[in-house]
Picture 1 (cartoon, rainbow, N blue to C red):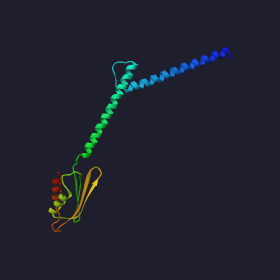
Picture 2 (cartoon, rainbow, N blue to C red):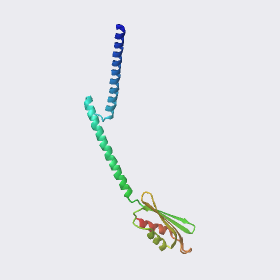
Picture 3 (spheres, one colour):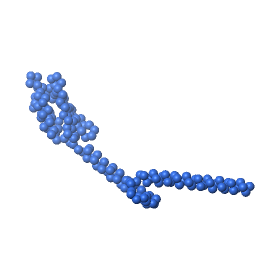
Picture 4 (tube, one colour):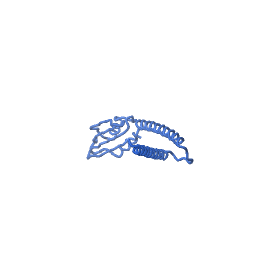
Length: 168
C-alpha cells in the first residue's frame, strides 16, 4: 500500500472521528439544555452535575405529587359515589290523570309507600307504580294515578308541595 494513501486514509478517519465527536457533544448540549428548561427556574447557574442531581430530585418530587393527586382523586370519587344528591320531582298532568316521577339517591329517607300515601290522601287512586334502580346508586319512582272523584280532581300544587316537604 502506498504511504501517501495510508496517510490520507488516517487523516480522513481522524476527521470523521472529530466530526462524530463534535456532533455527539452538540446533541448532548441540546439534550442538557432541554432538561434544564424543564426544571423550575433557579437564580444561580450550576454545574452539569448539580443540574442533573436537581433534575432527578425534581422528577422524584413530581412522581410523589402525581401519586398524591391520584390518591386524592380516588378519595373524592369514592365520596361522590356515596353522597346523597337532592331528589328531583316531576309532576305531569295528562287530561284527567297525573304522572309523578321522582329521581333520588338509593339511600333516601322515604319509600314508595310514603309517596303513594300522600297521593291517596290528596284524592288520587294509584293505577301503576314502578321503582327502578339506575346506574350510580339512584332510584327512579314512576307513579301513574287518577282522581278518585272526577268532580273533585287532584290538587297538583298541593301534591307537589307535600312531596317536596317529604323529600327535604
